[in-house]
Amino acid sequence: MTTRRKFIKQSALGVAGLTALNCSALGVARNFQAYPSNRPIPSKRTFVSDAVEKTIKNVKKGINNKELAWMFENCFPNTLDTTVDYEIIYGKPDTFVITGDIDAMWLRDSTAQVWPYLPLVHKDKKLKNLFKGLINRQTKCVLLDPYANAFYKDTTRPTKWKDDKPTPQSGIHERKWEIDSLCYAVRLAYGYYKETGDTSVFDADWDKAMRLAVETLRTEQRKNGTTPYYFERVRRNKNVTAPFSGKGRPIKPVGLICSAFRPSDDGTMYPFLIPSNLFAVESLAQLSEVYKTVFKDDLFSKECASFSNEVLQAVNKYAISEHLHYGKIYAYEIDGFGNKVCIDDPNIPSLIAMKYLMNEAFYDSEVYKNTRAYLLSDDNPYYFKGKAGEGQGGPHAGLDTIWPMGIILRAMTSDNDEEIVWCIKQLMNTHNGSGFMHETFHKDDASKFSRSWFAWANTLFGELILKLYNEKPKLLKSI
Image 1 (cartoon, rainbow, N blue to C red):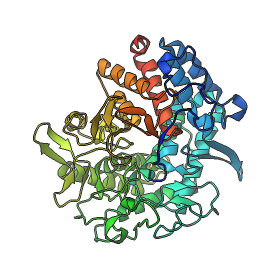
Image 2 (cartoon, rainbow, N blue to C red):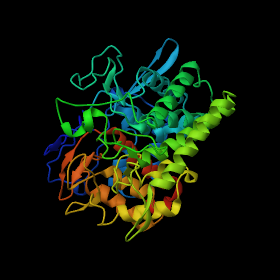
Image 3 (cartoon, rainbow, N blue to C red):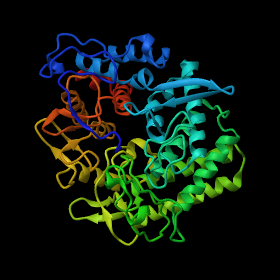
């Protein structure tokens, strides 16, 4: 995100206001004699879940490597420890989740930050209410502006980006149109419903918000060649300004949905962002199910299902092409005229994250396999190798910068035990002694990193370790 992207080099570590680790920059983690917790003390944590605390204790028992166990203990609860504002508003739970070092809530980040805790809601009523509160808060956000991606808790607070065109209304941090923002709101509510069977979150406001979301996605198919949306940033980092007076590059309407920005919050090169369109395919199918089974609204259910199928058919027709070395692969972005860009964004959704994020019914597994091979090769212009590590990067933080999230997703989507272990060792080698993940690190020097407090990356790392604990306990113990 452009507001987050400041490279820093730290010699004394201060991690997001947490307990500082008393060591020099040269004292990397593997040389420590002890691993004191970097979590805030219990009285300073923003939310405490007994189920999460029990999970941390159990998982640590399944990890032989002390450094890795320490990293898991720091990272897995980081969202709850540092980013949650929970209360009851007008008799309903309300949960606001900041992204970390920015006191705003992204629809994408907030969903992803709490996602690993979802299976634990049966064991903790407080945690269940946290999810209900976040669904309620996201509903308010979508109703405030379905094109916005990041919000303040105080809906009367003026935006930081007051010089953006158009100026976001009060309560909105940024108004960058990203397909995945709306999809993550669907993912959260649907995932909660499937886990709990609780339909109470599907109230009149949620219904109104979801219909508005579908209407917005329809509008951004731009079948008549127009859109009410535009975005120009004039005060800082003009690279995020959409070209042609904020409208973006031309597209040929083919049934796909335009996205002005990527999950990194960088502007798209070509507006048809394929991983986000595939995410929309799944989200619309999930809405179809909810409206059929819960709302008993067959008409809108069929509309969502038809929309989902239309986008999927367009992806299969226009976004898959033959690569010289890898066979058929997915493009990252296209314009419908035949132009495409074959890269990836280490955020989620991404091409490599499809196996993690989506039901396999919504993408071609063979094409995914080929795409993954391409993205993890030297043929990908944003795959970097250096003295500190190697992995996927992207334009967001500059050349030669590697995203730990990309390494985590590589492990999450791998069927190869050696590759999974290699990924975890990469993450252990590049956290710079902090015990936390960062947004990016330089390929030749892990002490050059961006964002010392990035809760999503931290929780995602915890999710990876929890996945191994549940699915590959022997492999986890072997590290």
